[in-house]
Length: 526
Image (tube, rainbow, N blue to C red; front, side, top):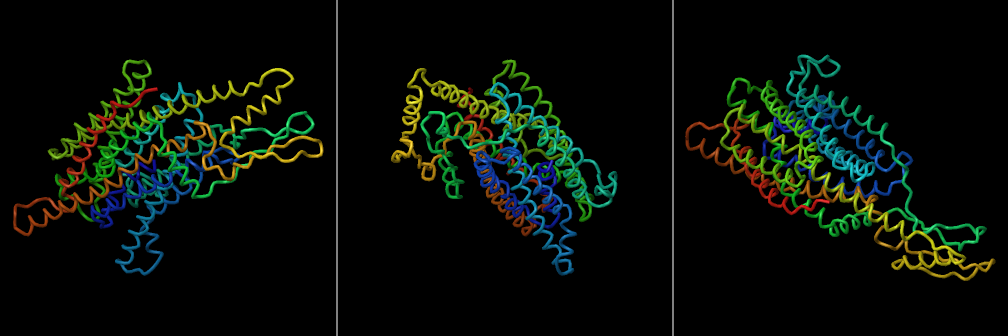
């Protein structure tokens, strides 16, 4: 719900604070920065966290608190600005912008922490055969939330809500208050119903007591990773990513080059078209009228995505369609639809186009993570089978000695030393490699958070490019508009009413979707 608030009302809200389109493009660098930093780090840390309540839930809760704080600051940004300094209008306006931008950055960072932990929790909790179904269910829950969020954004909340929820104030404040309630309920259900087992660091060998006749072996002690070790771990994991996941990452990179223009500017596009059709609605106090038109278009899009999210998993689980073919088709649908954005000049046409794109969104939120989850769980099962076969000790009187030899031979990269016999005449083997060994010893399943974090890097990196490309496109468009106005050419739309620049950005996204469709043919299904 927090993401819905950001997508539906973020850009129009910033524009209402007199930020230019070029600056809003820079503001939305918060998304890729947070995704690039937060998701891999949270994934790496949570993979080895030993909290009593589990590996993922503590990070869900900590991120959730920050999400709530940022939503409160966004909704009350003007009030906070009025209380924090001089009361002249210009100073209040500047502080409002600073508070709003800071809050949006905090919202992006905290949402990424929650999202990373929830996705890792899915892979941790379900077997490979259930990954496709569970990821589809997760995607559908997101689509249902989007339907609710965009519907509330479309309704005149100021008119219908009670005052304690933001009624009688502003649409943005009311929407944030509803978002807070939905988010708290969702996080509470997740944390209270999902069962996590407390994680213990894996010990390659188990110390035995001196009384049971076994050879005493020093315990494997693990120190906490320093920040530099975590960064090195992330870098190494990104470079050594398996081929099936690597190909999904390539598709994700170009797919999200196409998606980010839509996610950031679709409501602005519809709002601009609405203002062109209803110039009387574009007043300083009535900017929400056009934004509600954008929310209605996104509501249709969310409904279509919800329906597609139920239909396509049903078809793929029954083998009527393959996930690979559906994945390719979703990119083609997005590309063909958005390539027409330049020629669309009505709110109805834009609403239809945005609704069709809901089919592609449902597939993008489900298929990549289902493929990655199936691969990770399949690899983990292979590793568990191998470990079980190797861990069976041979029978007979020499069982303990053979077990010790097996342990010793399996530690080819571990530094070992033999300490002189103790008083009982028993040889003790010390293991010193934990402090110096650079690569952690973990199974594929324990690396789930890290693997999904690496995949997410290829999702967020495109937004850096999109932000820069969008800013450049808007600058070029504004220069053209300025020249046209100065040369007394025929009147052309300016300011928020000018949707041509936004259409150019959407057009760029459509061509990136075609590239993603081509690359999706190389995806390897497990």
